[in-house]
Image 1 (cartoon, rainbow, N blue to C red):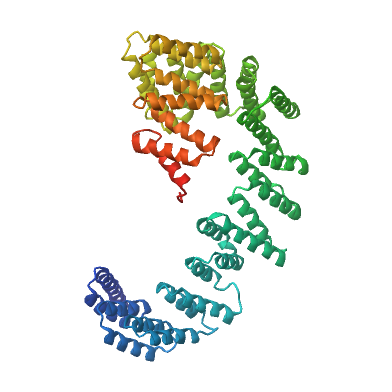
Image 2: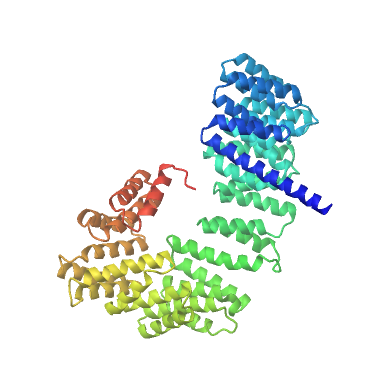
Length: 602
């Protein structure tokens, strides 16, 4: 008995494997264009599997490819007689008629298929609609699915299929209507529908259609939360954060939420440099949520950082800085100066050092901070790096290098360690130890950070090019000293040194670097016209020198972001990736050019 069962099992497995092998052969022959062999296998497979629809369809397609129309028609007649409820066969028959130019007969077969749809066979509705879709007969597919909705008395039953067909027909309002209906029919489809809208809606007109549809839906069914949330999503997607925040506030109040959606919009707006909206959002949480709310304290921290970023991103007055400093101190007085307020202290120190020219105060803040018990190691390391920078700005070189070395040692295999090594190498460059600095830059060429790697390559090549021309390093030493003075915010003294290089070493290859360094400082100080003047001098007078590609890239950025001159920016980006294809800016320039040209960059 056991042997009989085992034999039967082995026989069944053998037959199954044999069938799979035949299916692979049939597909191989079909894809290779050997339709006669494919037809033979597909016919056999269809019969062996009790009229398998896939194999039968492939059999018919093989006969059509061979133009054996009579054989195909005979096979279809026989199949329809044996399977009268299989309405897809009428689509196959219609396709056959159409291939032979029998248009009226084809239309009759297609109509017959739709007329046979019934409410008790949903699978047949889907299969018929999909069959028409595969033949790119979108109007017939729509008719099939719409009749399916009517028969089932469910407006969302085939909404996704209908939406997809309207998308293919490029009928955006209808597509939007049915995608929204699809979302309501199935909650798990909401995110995929949002992805579809993001992918297929292009331009303001399309999003106007979506907004109008959503507003109409909210009026028809104000209790449906989904429509209000979709309106918020549309505003965020279109970067209209002010309206998104207004919608989010209404939802927060209506649902008595904890402020999460408000906080999320604040974060997105802040990252997109829409600081006023972000500040408004954080202030809402501070004003309307209790201090035990999970977003309350973070909002008080984030609003300070956002205000700081807003001030330093634009033009500001001493009063602006003093007012912000006062807000920082109010927060610290309320919450204490300890490890929990470490990030606030880092921000305050930066404000004091870089914008209020109070290095002494910044250094005191960070000296105290790194001694706090329980301070996170990464926060402490960042505090040490900032403290080292401020020591260097105040002229205390050895204190600075000591701190860089401490971070390098503690985070040897970490990104922070790479930053510390780069800063230490740059310090050596500032003080004229060019050989050691170049050795470190060469090592840092393989840094995991692309930014550090590119800067290390740039500085290594820069030292090599300029040191080989003058073994005394005199011009390079003057240039490095000028860079250190700029780092210390001593702009006038730095420019005097740079001008001395230009006057003493009139033909030196450093001249384009002198112009470039001045341009960079003018940009930092908001003197855009002066910066443009120096960038253009580099491009016109030194097109073969190493700063030419840098100047083109930054000049393009100015025309794009400062002046909104898209045509000029495109021209400069194109020059960069066409004429300076080896530049580290080449890839970014090509991408920005395509974006400005209107290409859909994913």
